[in-house]
Amino acid sequence: NTLLQGKNIVIMGVANHRSIAWGIAQSLHNAGANLIFTYQGERLRENVAALTEKLGVESLLVNCDVTKDEDVEAAFAVIKEKVGVIHGLAHCIAFAKTEELEGEYVNTSREGYALAQDISAFSLVAVARAARPLMTEGGSIVTLTYLGGERVIQNYNVMGVAKAALDASVRYLANDLGKENIRINAISAGPIRTLAAKGIRNFNTVLKEIEEKAPLRRTIDQSEVGDTALFLFSNLSRGITGEILHVDAGYSIIG
Ligand code: 0WD
Image 1 (cartoon, rainbow, N blue to C red):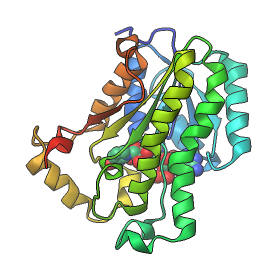
Image 2: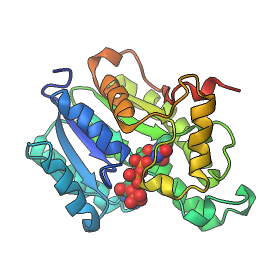
Image 3: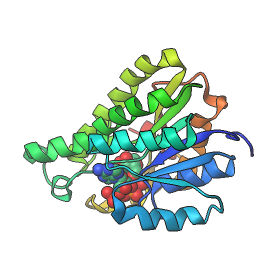
Image 4: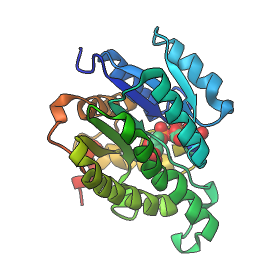
């Protein structure tokens, strides 16, 4: 399809072939988008380069650790210089210490709380601000959230609170950027086995519960999130902003 022909879209958060960001990259690539990838530190450059080679086109790869203001600034300066205008940004980044993802939320440390908020929620504000001046033809920003931000999910703890902040940020950012025809939405993905999911205790139990209780009686995969992202980056979703769209086989409607 040609839904995203001529669109420059930045993808942040590819760590390996299981990353949801990589599922998004494949859907957007198949729709004709020109992709720019950011990766977290030189450690991950090789990984990302090996993956993007498979797309069969030259992709711009840019270093960006979102905990560093100077990285965010430098990354978008390079993107501006190399591609000029961008039409989309996929923010697929989160982090919490594994020791904060088990036991009681009440035991969350000050540093653990701040770190999860910084990488998983504030980073969206930082990159939206940096991307805004490059979105001169309007734009679409998509982030990834999880049901644990809306209700209590065992072990999700500090990340759930970070996702609640992320969800609220989507609404405030939508209001700020809407006047420039920049939309911003979140996809609330059902659980998928990725590197980030490894940090969550009893993840298998979570997947099993989805298979039993979700209306579709199955879990979802990266390609389904990718295709929803494609919709959110395309003109088909032009009337939607500030929204949280659940791609979770319907699980969130079950009490
Ligand atoms: O079940 C799941 N896997 C779900 C994930 C369900 C619902 C939502 N999500 C969200 C995650 O919370 C996250 O926001 O999807 C997003 C992408 O996560 P993922 O694809 O599940 O996991 P992964 O492949 O690990 O990508 C997350 C990446 C990091 O990987 P690692 O695992 O190495 O921390 O976020 C990036 C990094 O590449 N990242 C950073 N990028 C820039 N600067 C930073 C940072 N400081 N920290 C982490």
